[in-house]
Length: 197
Length: 271
Image (cartoon, rainbow over all chains, first blue to last red; front, side, top):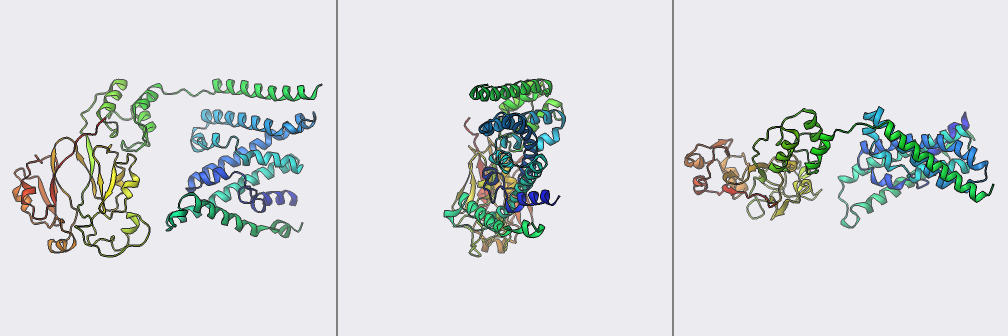
C-alpha cells in the first residue's frame, strides 16, 4: 500500500507533470486565468488521464508487447485516446448534458494533450502494473489540478499589479510560472522521507 | 508474420474499429438538434454581448424557439433587421425597435475639470474610484482610464482629452459599457432625432460644483423654466431630461449658464 501511496504523492508533488516534468504547458498557460475554468479543465484532465490509462494499458500489454510492436506506442496511443475521448463526448452529450456542458469545451481540447499522452507512455516506461498505472495517472491529473489552481491564484494577483510595460501579458506569466515551478523543487525528497523508503 | 505487415495491420484495424465505433455511436446517441433555434442563431450577430438578457446568442435563440419569450426585438446589436428575420422564422409579431446609442454624460475633460490628486496606481476606473472617489475634484465625473473602452466589443469608445466618448456610428447598443462604468455615467439615448441631454451627473450644491468643473450642472433651474414641454426636472442639484417629452427645441441649452445641457443628434450607424 505504501508503494501505491508513494506513486500518488510523487505524481502530485515531486514529479508534478506541469511544474516538474513540463508537460501540458499549453492548457496550463491558456486556461489558468480564472479559477472556475482552471477547475473545469483539470477535472476533464483527471477524467481523461484515468480513462486513457485504463484503455491503453491492456492494448499495450496484450497487443503491442506480445507482437514486439512497442515502437508503435505513440501513434496507437494517440489514435486510441482521441477516439475514446470523442466517444465519451458523444455519450456524455446524450446522457449527462450538465456534465457535458461543464466539461464540453475542455474535452476535445485535451484529446491529444501531451500530458495525457505523457502519462500513458511514462506508465509503460516505468514498468508499472495496472493498479500502479492507475494511481500514477490519477495522481498526475490531481497534480495538474493543483498546479492549475495555484497558478490561477497567482494570475488573479497579477491582474491587480502594476507590471512594467515590457513584461505585460505573457512574459510576466511565464516568469511567474517559472517561480511556481521553482518552489515545487522544495518537495524534493519529501516522498522518500515521509514514507521511509 | 512479416513484422511490418503486422504493424500496418494492427494500426489500421485499431483505426477502422475506432472509426466504425464513433460512427455508430454518433448515430445511436445522436441528440436531436432544435432546427428553429439553429436558424434563429444564424440570424443573430453572434457577439454574445448579453444585451437581450439571455446567456448569449445561443440562449436567446433557444428561448425564442421554445417559446419562453415572444420578444423579437431584444437583440440590440442586430437592430430592426434581425428582429424582422426572427419574426419571419418564428411567426411572432415584430415590435417597433427604437434604435439607441450610448452616451457618456460628462464633459469634465482635462480643460474643464479640476484635478484633486495625482493618481499612481492600476490604470482602471474601478480601482481609481475607490481612492477619494477618483483623481478629479468632481466625484461624479468620468475618471478617464477607459474601463468602458476595454469593455466595448465594437471599438466604439475612445478617450478624448481625459474622458470617454462614444462613437454613435459604431455603437451597437449592447450596454456593456453601461454596466462597466463605476460612476454610472453612460446612458442609452434614442438615435435619429435631436434630444436635449444633461451632460453632467454632479449632485453637489451649485457653489461646490462651480469649483470642481467648468461645465458642471449647478442646479440653477433656468432650464426647467425655459422648457416648454416641462421635460426637465432637478434632482439633488442636477437636471435631468425626460427624453420622451423632449422635442429638441434647444431653449434649455440657450439658457444654461454652464453649457451642461446640450442638444444631441445621434445618427444611425452605416450598415
